[in-house]
Amino acid sequence: MRLRRKPWVDEAIKEFNSFVFVKDDDDVFTKKGAWSPDSPLYVELGTGKGDFLRQKAALLPQVNFVGLELQQDVLYSAAKKISDAGLTNVRLAVFDINRIEEIFAPGEVARFYINFCDPWPKLRHAKRRLTYRAFLQKYRRLLVPKGELFFKTDNRLLFDFSLGEFAAENLTVRVADFDAVPDDAPTEYEQKFRAKGNPICRAEAVF
Image (tube, rainbow, N blue to C red; front, side):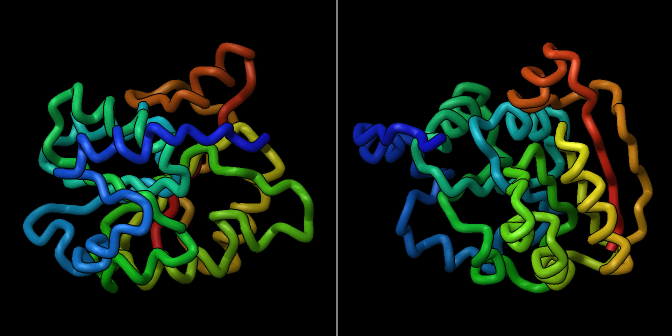
């Protein structure tokens, strides 16, 4: 379902321009290779409304985080949560993950998080899944040696597909849990799905 656009967000999100790169902001490209020179960098692909990133950044103040989200209206909610929490170790960007190599340098990222991404259930759309092998190859180029990918979904078919892609790309799967217990940073989707009794699948993979 397509989200109804909120025109007022284009102006309102500028309140957070100290840590948010808005849509069509070319300054985001200047950060390539300079996001976190002195601390580990963790990147969430598809930040949504920011519940996970807000919690994780508070738990790990020694880590710098970047959240990418294609929809500016959605990212506004994340920006407000990060601001209200007073977090200084988070940057957000309205950006297409397909172009991720344009804003991160090889070996710059220590860990990627993919939380409840679009499963693209039709077979002809498999290449759009964020765990498809072409994406994994991009992540590999951007990660430090032995860099990590943490993945969560409620979609068992997507999870099985992803494990197959991890194997095809010779990732070491450290965790493959088909009914994971709640952890310290649930996303808004995770809370919703758990309330319905849906099992949550979780994987940790090393490149």
